[in-house]
Length: 195
Length: 195
DNA sequence: GAGAGTCTAGACGTATTAGTCTAGAACTAT
DNA sequence: ATAGTTCTAGACTAATACGTCTAGACTCTC
Image (cartoon, rainbow over all chains, first blue to last red; front, side, top):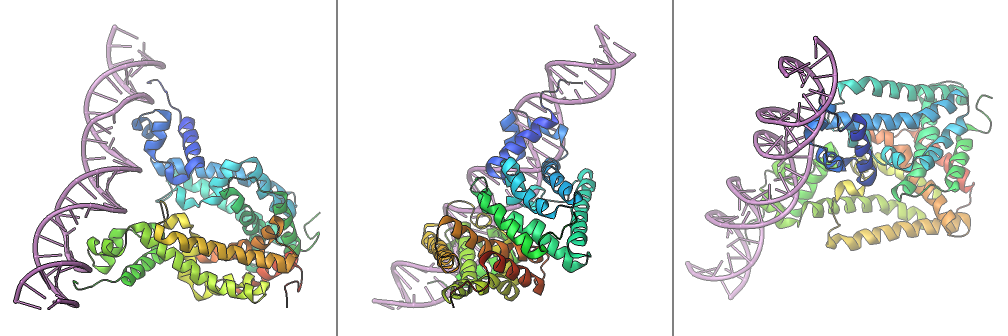
């Protein structure tokens, strides 16, 4: 083997830093190479394509975000799940910006690399399973209408409430939690989650 | 004068169609010209730059959206203002996709063209004035906390509730209005808007 | 009808990108 | 040591943008 000056993780870290600074569009292969002072050839020894790298970056970020969310749902605490978003955002401002200010398509331009498809599918399914679980707990069944409500209260409202602060690179104020919680109680009702 | 085969409006219409189909990134000068079978030279006789065209497109769209919103606020009907978003979305699916699925920066890449700056500033100010008016009506004063609540209930929640349907090019179902209205009443209280 | 200004027409220049390719350096296993 | 593999190194290719430039056609005014 030749000497390995630049690792898989090095490229990912550089990409993450570039994305945090100027968004995923600024994560070009040349920019990554320049930041590491690595040659482009080395990049393509580690990653099949730009999409492969950005797909990995996105997936790792979304899984980190999702972990705490899934736990609160499995613990049966819907309100905590709704408040997980502002909490995670406060603890991970840069990653939160990537996840909530941009869409998957800003990362992976073409088709998803085959190596990541499975991971993305599992991520999606896990998230949807959470919504179903919550819908059943909070609304008695998991029909389309209950799923729709669950999405609203667990995903749409929390991310919307946090967005403007992310745009300004600010930590969301406590008022955000209050707005989310008030909305939660109005839609779900007080104490409807399983104990 | 030479004969005018392609008008300002023709280019805007072509751009709007392209944006509706594949997003603002697909609105390249070449794509517009190809769609109209116009030469690029003609484009640059009408518009100073690509940003000038996309800026105009965005501003016209946002003003169309904002018009109904401002009216409901000036009529003192906060709930109607919150429900204006799903209503407008249903009546203008394509324009709504442009406005709510993409950000201003997906349209204008660099600095805003000088000719549009004033219009954008006035648009912003008018919107913020609405939020202030509402904050005073609904919460008694227009401090930062009241403005923040107003933003949540009039802008963030309605657009978030509608987003997933826009992504699927679907008309938002009535349930969306219910979710927005329930949230509105929870945050503002019933009948707090001026009569 | 002549001159001037405006628009059509599209080739061209320049920049930026993803990805390829060849050469050689360094390390490992035999 | 040496053969083979892996990685470094960066020039090169191809595609796609925006924007410019020159030539000529058209129309309006005088």
